[in-house]
Length: 287
Image (tube, rainbow, N blue to C red; front, top):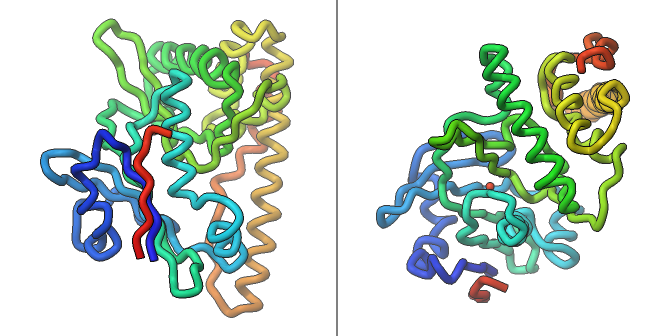
């Protein structure tokens, strides 16, 4: 059984969407293949980005089958909502879920337009200082005024999930991707705002710079902002270390090889932070 939803503006892609699970492995070019598989696919002159979500574990299968939308469905709905709010993201095209005979979710796909961009936020830490400061300043204004002030929390706000275009005037446009973990709130307090920035990888100076520019627009003390990001990053790094140890122990018990799940330990550099200041849709059910 399948369930799907297609943006009415892209109804010409219905046949493509319904055949995704059959043709996905032989189509397009892979961008990333890990827990999820991300591809660029050209179809009828349209450049698409297709994300195949891996099969969820049993508890999530139950949840996504009977209790809450799948990751693909959430990505689509959240993308439409962000665009309504004036927050840019690659245009959502469709989602589709595949179920077994027990109506348990087996696989899902999210389809959007492919967004041509110049770089992602994570790339800027290799830029020259002047260019880096310019992008960090623009990003801080955007995430404070456009994102957080509108009650949007991207729970995976990492450098790779913010795409950036440099427009003709020299200004920058920011686009969110990997949308399934977004949460919408009425109001976001200062502590949650700072915690939301902790996944951005970079040196203490870069994170302190974000805190400095952010505080200018949130009317908060720059040093206090930097300290908050630093502490949140420290707690987050320790959490990932603990999570890695637990998973390693479980893999040892089950005889599976350990996998590294967190990045380098940046906690040693955090002590100095304080001083461096991608219904509009047509719903269908097919069996």
